[in-house]
Image (cartoon, rainbow, N blue to C red):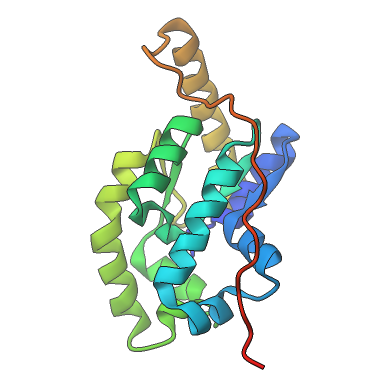
Length: 191
């Protein structure tokens, strides 16, 4: 949360002339309600199931830029799909910057109870090793302009792509599968 996934992702997409998707926004569009409402009705487990279906759908698309929610990597199936179907970039952010950025937005269900700083620190302690294990590229977004972050990412991706051409892996890392039908909305509003 607050690392700049959506902002940086949109700028990279513009620069590379590729479509941008945010998995959370796509879930909201498919369900017709926002993420906090999904959490209210189905809890985090229900949201994570929806997220897994959406990530499967989106990672089958070719030549896109995808921003996922920070918890997407909690499921092994998501980690596998993200890592094998694309290039994963871990946008790392210092806790102080993260607290500052997330304090501007009250639509983050995981930060609505208790001390947001402690919650973010606990989340980071748990997820940081997972992010690092999935990421092909690791970039800090703390105290850097978005433009600088985008420049750095584009250079690193280009370098990674050149390396893949000269040293091809034993197996394909980008799926050629075609997109399946998007996940259907399943939120049932109480009458």
